[in-house]
Length: 158
Image (cartoon, rainbow, N blue to C red; front, side, top):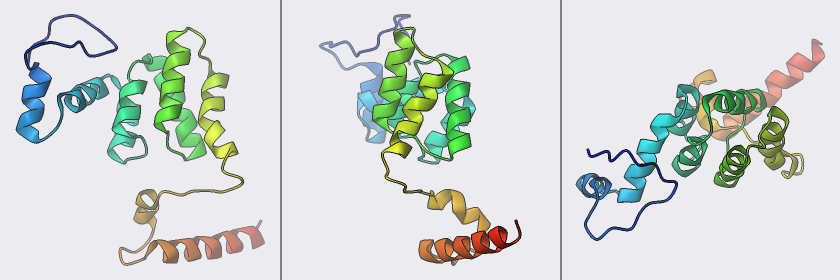
């Protein structure tokens, strides 16, 4: 709508409704949420896909959008390798390290794997990602049971 050429990490307080507020009203969203959606355009398409698949929350995606493309690629690679999502807390931490100039591949991996280490040995699989490998009528429990059977066969053939 209206771009004033001014970048800011926080929203300025103004007396009149801003363009984002007007756009939000039309779609039942807050102006702040519209601004988050706009920030998502700064994400690489792989991370944007993860937002669409709900592996990354919109707010977390907006935080990641402040990280440069090179580090976004690394973040995406770690998420793919670990088959995990990203919390808002982790995204904020990644953004902070990036803005402080202290980000590295090791720090990215540590932040993303931090959640996995705190899960006390739990492995969480996203049903939406599994669904394409099983018949449509399978419930999450049926998918889990089938996975255990597949793993048993695989282990016996190793």
